[in-house]
Length: 96
Image 1 (tube, rainbow, N blue to C red):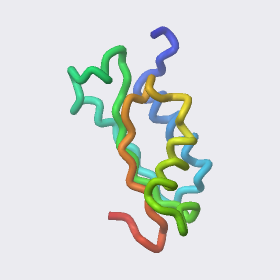
Image 2 (cartoon, rainbow, N blue to C red; image 1 turned 180 degrees about the vertical axis):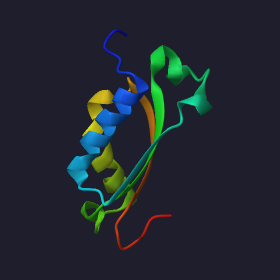
Image 3 (cartoon, helix red, strand yellow; image 1 turned 90 degrees about the vertical axis):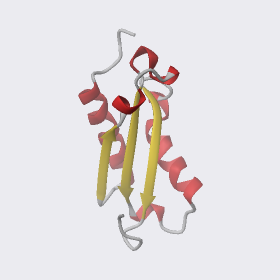
Image 4 (spheres, rainbow, N blue to C red; image 1 turned 180 degrees about the horizontal axis):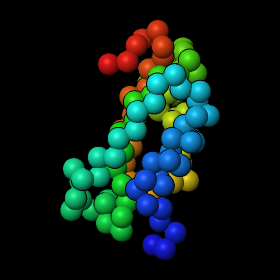
């Protein structure tokens, strides 16, 4: 796919988009190397893990928190992001 960003460019795009949630902590990890050969990784689609702490998650359940994260990157799925594992907490809950 000619418009596929490099892994570094994609990480930058994801990080920038997640700023919409005003995170106090944001860790984004490219786990694509763990999924080599997986059908979803064909064509360069990547697997990421995000740990995000935001006041915007206050009062929301896990599903609603994940929806907020997915809304930030929805147009990048299923390509160039194939999978996104999410850990979303509030500052009060801390970060594990």
